[in-house]
Length: 237
Image 1 (cartoon, rainbow, N blue to C red):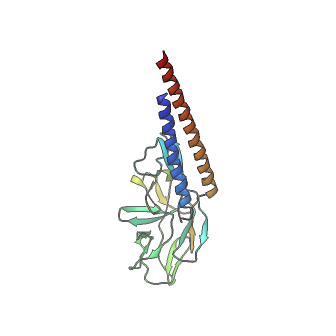
Image 2: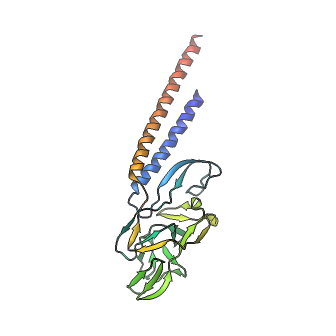
Image 3: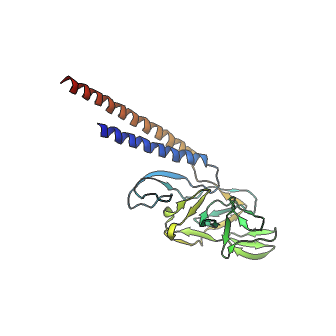
């Protein structure tokens, strides 16, 4: 009986992680570039999930990389990728990738993320000396009508292997995700891709979690009562 309580308690605890996942999705429903997370029980043959050091077996958080809604902002440095591509950026810890296209210019005229990481072009950091900027659907950056570089847009053969970092960034550990140049995605300047979170789905998920948790509580209570009855009977023998 004790083992039964332990099993139910472990299952109930897993629902807390499932709830954390759903609430995090709802909290980021309006975050540009955010991809919804899903709590799953993975088999050994499944992908590696989303966080460094995570096992490919047992409970894990996976990421839904489907397209989010694209909304107009009219800011030329707000960029959305219509397709599977990611923006390549240079952080202090190395290369990373993002779907969050809220970019700006730093004091040196380099295109950077909100966190100050450099947005990469085919030639490296993108330095812009003037203000008349145009960015084509192919990612070509022109200043005063002159092409200076093109955005480095990358896609992955196995995006499930990407490791999720903070601030909407992902990393490809040991190049296992199979990074490649993305040819099909289109860049939309003056637009942002918002999260792909579906609020109604997440609310339904939270209701299901609550009901599941309550059912586990009832089972634990029943097992506990049966333990007491069994103990009393043994005491009367």
